[in-house]
Length: 328
Image 1 (cartoon, rainbow, N blue to C red):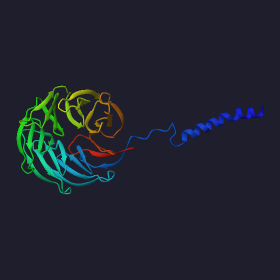
Image 2 (cartoon, helix red, strand yellow; image 1 turned 30 degrees about the horizontal axis):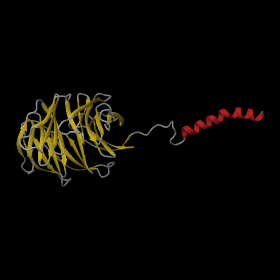
Image 3 (cartoon, one colour; image 1 turned 135 degrees about the horizontal axis):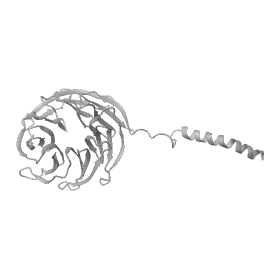
Image 4 (spheres, rainbow, N blue to C red; image 1 turned 60 degrees about the vertical axis):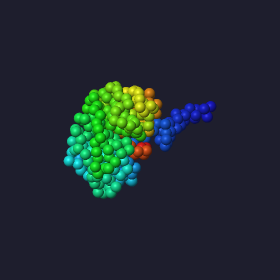
């Protein structure tokens, strides 16, 4: 009887102590999950766009292209820079060369083999505003706000030659390439597919007016993601010459600005929510993954296997910085 009474007295205390031990032990069920991304560094601006190529980064701030040493992502170093007379709207990095779409200046070709002293190898004035550029071999395709898609022979970078233009139905916004294929977008709704392995004049092998106010396009094997109209618009490129429109995904804020694709993941710079991450491993059923809420509006993003570089800040040419985020 006495033993029974003692058990009744001590049981509540023992249960309380056991519960306390569970909630305070490492890895307890009640512990919060660690954040998906941790900020480990900053790159001062101005910053509008960023591209990563190996251990090098290429930062655009207004009219200036800056080369970065990212061998230690937590402590990035600025190496050298080159400035154009006009704003840089887009860049593509191919080896030791950066192709710059520089507004009314046209296409500028910058040699970065000496990263501390980038130099202009060649340039060409184009009919309108150069918005972005894509490369297929020694052919550069420039999204030109006025003439559509300008086709430039850059086999001699010192003397690029315009071969022809293909007029898009709307205002050209962006162009990207993968292999011999190039994809251009225009406003308000166009997506154009070009196969540069074909001989003769450059003409689309497919075109459709199914996009919604596309502003940029990103490619990965078998996938294209267009950003525009407050949405991510997914296209299936399993047959590269015949894109098939897939799901349209609205971010929680409805304010995506730019994106980058790494495998089947889309990293989105969102004006309100910072970094948003979308899993497209099943393209017909995209899903959001944990992201990172930045203190300022996000404007561009680049990603590697371990790190994400998020451009944040106001939209002016002399504004912005880059947050270096490490995946947990």
